[in-house]
Amino acid sequence: METILADMRRGVDKGLMEKAGSIIKSGGLVAFPTETVYGLGGNALDPEASARIYSAKGRPSDNPLIVHISGMESLDYIVGEVPGQALMLADAFWPGPLTMIMPRSAHVPLSVTGGLDTVAVRMPDHDIALALIESGGGYIAAPSANTSGRPSPTTAKHVMDDLDGKIDMIIDGGSVGIGLESTIIDLTESVPMVLRPGYISLDMLRDVLGEVRMDPGLHSDDPSFRPKAPGMKYRHYAPKAELTIVEGSEENVRAAIESMAREAISRGQACGIIAADEDASSYSCGIVRSAGSRAREITISRHLFGILREFDDLGVDVIYSESFDTPRIGMAIMNRLIKAAGHHILKV
Ligand code: AMP
Ligand code: MG
Image (cartoon, rainbow, N blue to C red):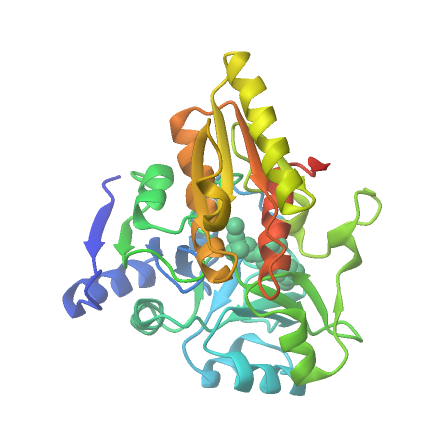
């Protein structure tokens, strides 16, 4: 199949958007930018479209998709009973990087929800995404637009690298703003539970709802403590190189990474280093990539996945990364980085 590349870096193009909407309505797939990462969209009410999404990504079919909407009036059709808490969160954070799990209505095919009786819903904060949802009939099922197991795409080029020839269209809207997938909160639990950390932090959710807890499965290495979001159990975002996160005082971390990088290079390995802007110039060997500034944590979340992909392209053998426990998005950044490292953390 030939994949159409639709350039909307300067904003929504009406003609191309009509074409994109008609692709969605006829069961095809369109990748599109959101404020979090690029999504791979299909008609959420069409079971065959979701089957195509799973197949293009190589995604296990028990891993449900998020349904994207563009207005609150769309909620009743796909959700059994809309919890009051959803209205409060929508008021505070929609459109925005928050996905809510609610009871599913019979209109949502089980293929979209991976057989679950709940549905994940989000209203993205991005002109192109909102225009595509409207043009495509109002309900777009979309996981991240990457091959399953690779880091989520934050540019149209990343999507091309993974899905060119496998989907109908890719809309290029430039680099995304946040760079990490949405926060997921489950409102079907007696106490609302965060299934995936993201830009909307636990504290922001507690400010609106009061009591909110983290899924205990997220922080456990114990296999009997499974994360509730099916997607969180997979070893996502795994780079081809062996990735180690180094934690400790800034001085110790810099010294340890410098010396391990030297050793790796002397063994003949290609070594990548992920550093903060503040430290990047202190390394004297290795391929050093600056994720962003600790003082502007959004710059770190925005660049992280792109750096992991770049190291894959460069054929790096080992990667050492500084730790980025920044105040607000740090929990989400470290959740992704720790998964990418397969929980390989060195304390110095
Ligand atoms: P992605 O769109 O690639 O970010 O993946 C969507 C994420 O949402 C995955 O981790 C899914 O497991 C999770 N998810 C989607 N629907 C549900 C649901 N009904 N219950 C729990 N997790 C869900
Ligand atoms: Mg994904």
